Each structure stands twice: as C-alpha cells, then as structure tokens.
Image (tube, rainbow, N blue to C red; front, side, top):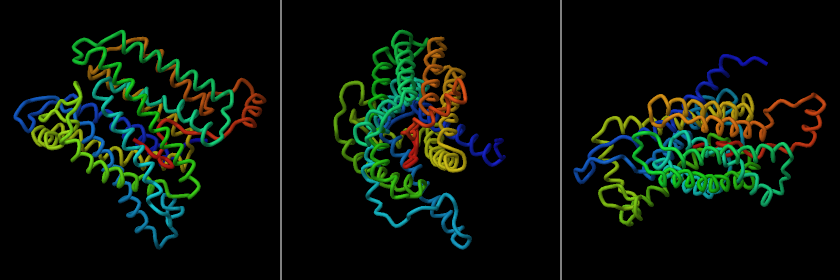
Length: 370
C-alpha cells in the first residue's frame, strides 16, 4: 500500500529529527569555548546535555495540551486518545531509568564516534529479550533468536573495529573509544529495564504516549536538576572531570561555555527541539503505520548519522564498519519480522508462531524515545 503525502512527511521528519538529535549532541561535544575559569576547553557536559534532552521531552507534554485544547470540541485527536485519569507517578520509575540510561549514553558519546553510539544502541534488543523472558514470561521464537545473534555479531564487528583502528587526528585514545562503546551498552541495559517496566506497569493503562513522554520529561528534568547541584560539588574520577572545577558536572561552567560560543547554543537547541519533534513523529508513525515501519526508518537514521559523520570527517571510513552495520541492521529487521520469508507457507507458519514484538531500539513510552 502506497504511503500518503502525510505519511511520507512523518517518515522524513522521523529520520531527519532523529539524526539531528544525535549529531547535534556530538557536535556540541566537539566544540570548544572559554569556561568559567577563562580556559578554553572542549564542551563535555553530558549531564547538562541530558537535562536538555528531558527539556525537549517536556515539550511533548506542552504539545499534548495544545492538541487537546484545539480538538476538545471536535471529538479529540488520535494523539490524545486514551486514559488521561492516571497517577503520573506511575511513570516516575521509567523516568529514572531514562535519566540513568541517557546520562551514561551521553558520557559514552563524549568518548566514542557518533555512528558507533547509534549502532550500539541497537543492543537494546538483546537485553529487552532477556528481561522479557524473566519478568514478562515471554517466549522468544527462532526468528527473534536469529535476529539477536545477528545483532551481537554486528556489534562485535563494530566494537573490534573501534578498538583496532583509530581515525587520523582523533584526540581520543583507543581506551577511550572502547570505554565509550561499553558505556553505551551499559546504558542499553538500563533502557531495557525502562521498556520492560513500561510494558508491565504502564502499557495496560492506555496512557496517551505523547502525554507519557511529557511526564517522563518532567520527572527526569526535575530530578536531574537537583542532581546537577550535587554533581557540582562531587569530585570526578580521572578523565571524567573536564570542567573548571574537576567535578562530575559543572553546570555553571557549561552554561558559560554555551554563552561564549553561539554554535554550542545552536547545538543544544538542536538537541531540545529535535527530541520533541522526533517523539511526535515516532508516535505518529507507530499509530498511523506500524512499529515495524518505525524500526525500518530508525535503521535509515543510523545510516544517515554514519554518512554525515564520515562526510564531516568525525571519523575515517573502515570497511569493517560497513559489514558490522549491515549485519546489525539485518538482525534488527529479522528480529522485527521485516526480512521476507522464503515462501508464503513459511511466512504463515512463522506468523502463527510469533509472539508480539518486544521492543524496537528506540520505542517511546509506551513509545519513549531518546
């Protein structure tokens, strides 16, 4: 069935805004500016960037309220349909998982390539599957196991390539690249806990996804704002305190750097605005088309991020990355049932045996996104 012009617009918005979100965050990491002590240094403030991401999620709640207000006399809108009489604090644990996972991911992003960052986020499939078997009594079928094994192989290829090769002029050492990749994998373990929690305790309440994302943004931003005060006085371990005070996070130093370099401000605004539009587009694609379509588009986003990263010389091309990317994408497609079956009969048998898709790599809550 051909896509309508509106569906094509949503698909393009999903790919573009999702790509901008990751690229703008990495762009900010590569920029320099004077800090609060007058010294010029790289902008490495992962917790401040995580706060900006939650601020973008809060805009989803504002969007929800605006859509609700404009359609209150016309029977409502697809984005506002659902149960609105719920306790928002049911979303607090999910927001805390989101906070921890996003913060760790952004720390990892400062240490590795943005393309590796995006590819390693695909490892969430593995951990969601394991946790779903444990806490949701899910049965993983053969097709999904094939997808999981393919994802693991693809990620190993990407990780080994990062460990063996280093781009010319790359300021980060091999150990930093490996550490960054491992931190992103750890973050996916946390994010998979968020998805399983949402499926077990939130999905059954039929909360409008845009409203759920917005509330998680409110909780995440509120808690992280308090943590930023604590982190301002907490000494950082070696190699993780690249700010004026050498603490876990110097928010004052970060804000001064943003004020001293308009490009950092532009990149930060890109993170805030793009995450809001990305969530909106993702939820709309899932509602109007399918979660599988969204997964395919998200694979396109990973490819776009990799291409842009190569084009702006943030990393060198290695053919091993291409193999790892191809195997990773095949695994994600196989896991989600996108790969065509050998025959119609085989497809029918597979459909009879399949369980519902557990999660795609970046689903918001119940379609939450970062």
